[in-house]
Length: 253
Image (cartoon, rainbow, N blue to C red; front, side, top):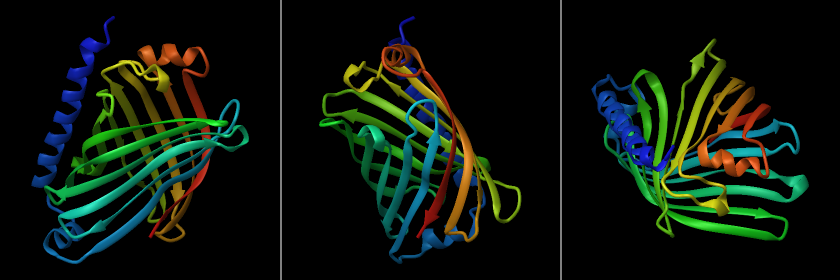
């Protein structure tokens, strides 16, 4: 099957859903904090380590992180994002950094644009690449947090990613968080193990206990499967599907 045939419609459909969600969110009653933020002209700062975790998998166990934050006023902010994984025992790591200008378009959604930089190293070798970024981030209807982006690399390769998560309050301190992730590429980029078409899907669940709102250790499970040409590339040197148990901490300042 020609996965290229489905790549562009998938990207367009994904972002149509996000835009519609943003429009629907605007029609909802905003929570108290969002009204204050949209009307105030103070400068705010925020930094959160959404994931700082250790995963137990077959083979080497990776350390994972996902950190983001912003500084700015109610409508205009500078966002910083980073995520990646490291195998300290094998001197391997893959990491991503983004610097984004963010503009509030509703009390629930921001549109973002900027740059992204990827770095991967194994032993003494490394490779890197840069991207231009356009994306959206915010709260969709029913309080799903959505973060989606489209990327154009320095070589003209087009890709997109989408992450959605939701907080389930069992008590005021015990919170479950299901997570869905996926990504897609229009071109093959074999040096990065990326094939055209839908690259992967990921499902996870984390259960955290907030000793304070700013500090919450958690445990969980994560499943990821590579698809299509990306899976074909992975079979030659790795796993196509991974199930891991995990533990970590969530912190914000």
